[in-house]
Image 1 (cartoon, rainbow, N blue to C red):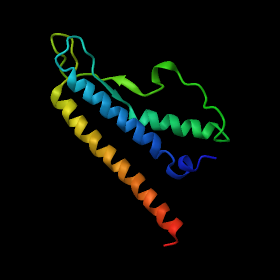
Image 2 (tube, rainbow, N blue to C red):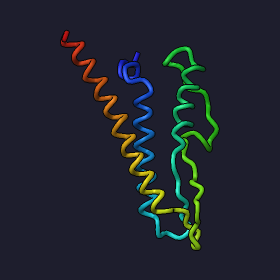
Image 3 (cartoon, one colour):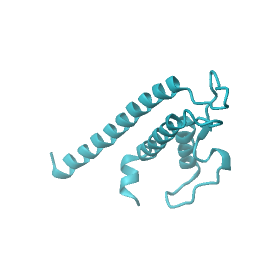
Length: 128
């Protein structure tokens, strides 16, 4: 029995997915001038949906998760641009910057939830 996974539940996976999203968006921004670079992002709903679906299919946390199809295992997908560059680059700076700001806010919100949950557990252990 893993006390941490039972305590934080899906929020650990959410934090990891949000972190990966920030990494992908930063890579997109860094490669905005690279010819033929394809912008990528994470389908957050798909990642969490897969975790919930796996949880429903297993009867014990020690069971191995069921296999996933190779293309969607981590939820990373190529972004469809509104206006592709003439050099084949699909990074749109204004879209990527807006998505990065939203992803950073979502990351902080998830982290705050985990911190509040840990604080509640600490108070319960102290008997407050």
